[in-house]
Image (cartoon, rainbow, N blue to C red; front, side, top):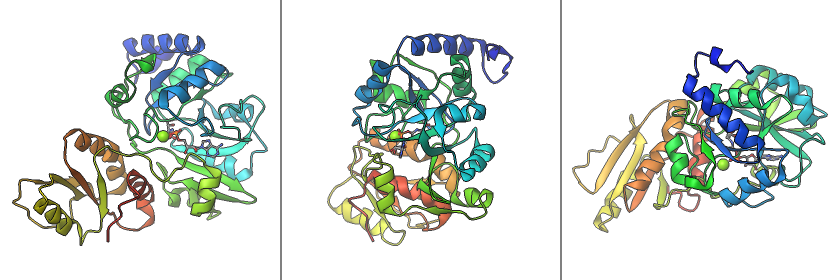
Length: 341
Ligand code: TXA
Ligand code: MG
């Protein structure tokens, strides 16, 4: 797509930036770019030194596989082989979109990208800037792009977050504003005739199940860690100590911390915890009731309060129901050590 100026969603200035970004990528550089989920730190998968840089910049272990992003479903067979029918169904229905499929890698995907595995995570992002970048690079190219944060930290959902995380370590940052989903893609793997959600994310389980007529399950924890070695328990961590509390317990805990002179923020859904605190050491922040809207601002909210030098972040546990899976997953991994009643 050399004609990106025809895309009304992209300004002329951004077109020029995207062209400059493709030059950098072809020369083996790294470029952070917006996707609909979170910002990615991109490198051309065919340039080994560029892929190495991603691991170095993020401080990420080299056996932790990267997701490969490409532009068009017609290229799927360039990057994967032995593609199950269920995978085609999902790809046709949800791409471009917040869905990553784990498939057998083709010979064109280097093992350095897949952390030594014979499978590869593939996705077509639903963002005009990401798609323009991939299209200009050409249908023979693909970008490895993990979330553009240091390893173990909160994923960035704005260009400023990327600057905070990576500073000058990345050659260029394309600023596409705030990401519309705000949580990473849903990762789906395949085993025999069933599909399994390995990481809950931007697409709810119910939407996948509808397209696959129920032939999809949530992978149990054990498969989860075997299949996705990157899925360490502790991830998405703010620097401020964080505790996850039930709705019943959260204010009691805040008051307890208050008596220990701790400045605390209580992050809870707007409809819950009606407790009125007059205490200046406790700040209440209301989150949306809708899981997608909640997920959209979760990372930005954690980051914001992390900057404000609180002693403790208390987060109310959302309802234990399927639409909240992705949010609960990120919260637990933001601090798995302190899950309170
Ligand atoms: O929404 C997203 O998926 C974002 C945007 C930038 O596309 N990317 C992202 O990448 O979240 P990253 O690297 O932060 O997380 C990728 C996850 C890791 O947990 C990794 O283990 C898993 O995908 N993964 C990638 N390739 C895999 C493979 N071949 N087998 C199992 N898991 C894989
Ligand atoms: Mg990540």
